[in-house]
Length: 360
Image (cartoon, rainbow, N blue to C red; front, side, top):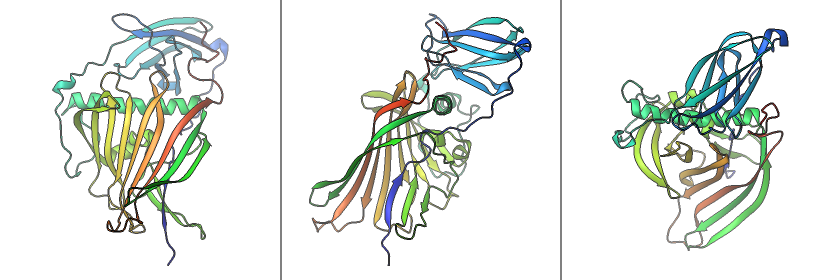
């Protein structure tokens, strides 16, 4: 019988969904919106806020001074939506004049959530999946919305500012004796072109290559964790305060719906208590595939860091496979590890804050 191996594969970590661009009106039928986004009660600029015109499917980041320029906007009234992680979003109507530049100033209020009053919950069997209800738990729903905001900023970054990153990959085996041996160490350059969408039953798949059959684990990343399909198939609970790498965080626990029989994931998401930026996610398999009976448990821990202020991307991904092992035999492996550590990021065109259409 052919031996089957377990492999971790990272899918869709930096991918976004390409959006069809709206038809740009002629200059005589359009105008320009010039604006700056700041903080209410102080007016300090909010760098890298998200400014969008939903009716046109247009969306962009402000620059590092909170400024933005939207050209080719059809004349007339348009609805402008402005968001920033950790702040309440704002909507305003702007009357655009053909051939003119109209200036707006938007001030966002800091998100007001009394974390000490949020009810801590424990996850039981997931029989009613879905995101938290604003009606039944408004405080937790407000916190949970910041997870979506993290994902949305991540998607916009990948869509509008494509980049590549160099990742150090290290694999190791730990033995019952206590010895650890590094089995592989290399550096890979990875782009943003991988696409994978969460669907129950697709997390664990087996390749069909005749000479190298493997079992692959499609790791849900930030984009998938906030995807509608993922939300509809998992339960979520506020697990209260925690600490990640010295930073106070809010922990959100999640579990797969009980109706899902194939392997899926459960785990935790950690948001910074002050900024609501994602700091870490921890994923575990709900069940081990029949194809890999040697595996006892799988855990994947992803740490995030800022690529530019207030925009986080994965910086370290660590997978741990605990093996079924005879503990009386020191020569046998009991755990395998793989660590992917980001070394550097290279934007392929411009990055937020360097858009040539935004002038000082």
